[in-house]
Image 1: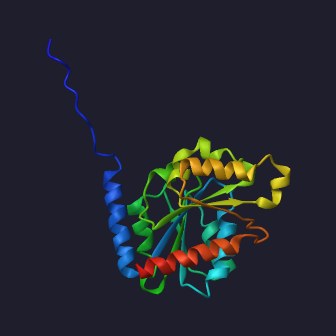
Image 2 (image 1 turned 120 degrees about the vertical axis):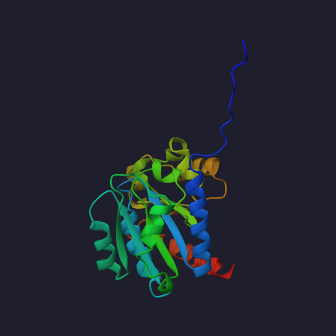
Image 3 (image 1 turned 120 degrees about the horizontal axis):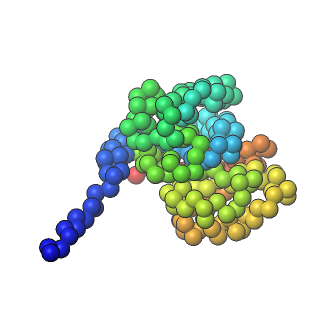
Length: 224
């Protein structure tokens, strides 16, 4: 009997998206626009964190926001009313993530000649958004204290692809079994280069450090 023919499949199913993402990053670089992909689970405080951060940055950078959700325009309206920063809503049609092409479609409605920074608030989910390169310059995610410090162990890809991890809702840390040092350790296991910043979006504690991180990232992106 002839041996069974084995075919090695080496092309990633995400290859087309990866190419689109790389092309988008090159376009952003050419325009001097920095795109941040912000991810987290629902209820972690993404929008509240953005409001605090945008109010610190809007006089220093020209900023726009893209809010991605399966439905509704609640977050886009909230951002615009609370900060005055231009904000658009992206509906994913039931999909739990954005890919590079979907991100590009959103950017088509942003004044790319009038912004330095675009923040994409991705769909609330710790799995699917991490699987798709959006074309962003950096990935960031928010882990809220009530979710537990063990999430980097349970959702490895999300923490592996993120350059920045914001640990939010530190004001309730005394009421939850959350170990910040353990969290840092687990993040390092997934991504030794990731920066971990504890914040409280409700009180504003630590948010200035996030704003400063973004400011430096944008400036460095424009210099390179």
